[in-house]
Length: 373
Image (cartoon, rainbow, N blue to C red; front, top):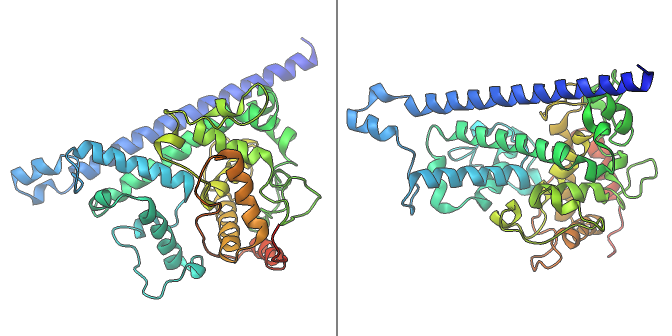
């Protein structure tokens, strides 16, 4: 057998092993979630009367609803929406419910100051998009495991949709380019800013990355960051499905299909969390990592830190009305929601800024002239 054929077969075998690894992990996650939900449902039975115990086996009934099962499923749907459009990963989710830290002097500008303010900011985002009729569900003792399970499942959905179903269209590459860790490392390492193996994850710069810019001139640029079309394609694939970026003319399809999450979730504009999520997922999809977790096992990239850094940058720019950040939202909304009447960059946000790369990006943003673009 020739050497190229040997490499091809080796790459295929590695790709199959990775796919099997993903499948096995997904199965373990599903089984674990089932066990956790069963435990939370069955807990506390010995402390209640038989009639109360029987009632505790039923799913909760949200105020203003008639179908408790439908209410719980609707609540899970909103968690999936929250994970996608607001917080890809939450810090200390068990501290968010039932009422969070309830800080009297909380200000959005202090959102990333400490753990309490982080949780408060997350909870404010959640309460803004979560229907009041379903709020009683979040007061139940079993709600946090349900919240974590729904969020984890959504991240699993995102990884499959972006890399396997839409990856070739996002990166304009072949399936072989994305099939294995080594293939992705070799083909896209420079594009996604893959750090050297000996690099401390805390020292990794999440902003001076080629795939985030359009055009890229070898350094972080406030005028071009978050404008790479690949990032917008990723969000389109998430909201409207992979077929939305596989059109004959190469343009995005913005048809409001009834079965897309864009329609089901009534998404009419981009959010800071959605853009930050798309940036992280785009980088991850071309990384050596097999699974989508907070810390990349193969890439050694802290994906959660990257997400929070991007979120803080966008929120801070909106809060300070920076023209380059307004242009980011204008560009994304014109591409994804050309007929929307909601204003661009609708959700102002906050600041984190404790890591050097985030501080450096913010310093460039703060030094930017405030004239209209």
